[in-house]
Length: 100
Image (cartoon, rainbow, N blue to C red; front, side, top):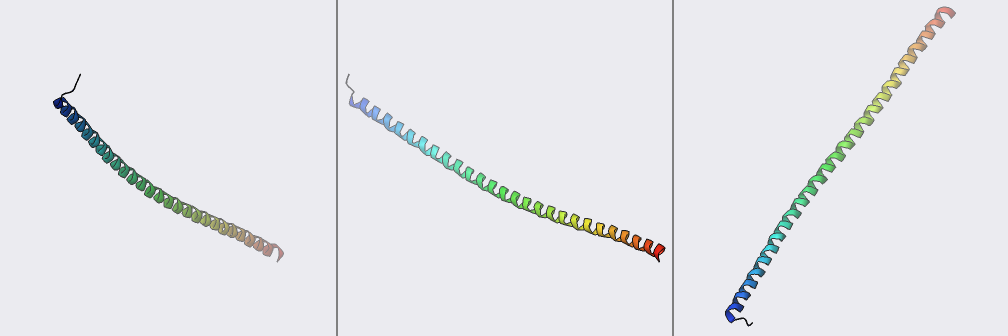
């Protein structure tokens, strides 16, 4: 079976149209891919900012806890000295009362 020139032109046009549709599809997919990459980059940047904020908050909490621990230790030392000092004063008063 032989193809007429008119059928050959029709087949060539169909193949050309198919090629155009394939190229348009690839262009659309490339656009979608670029958009997705931009979204991924923005999400990555947002997560990096959030991680940095959380790291700063953690550091702040650590500093506050260390300061609180230091304050508690100082308070315990002062109360220990104060109670020990009053005990020593009581012994001195007792000694003075009985011993002279």
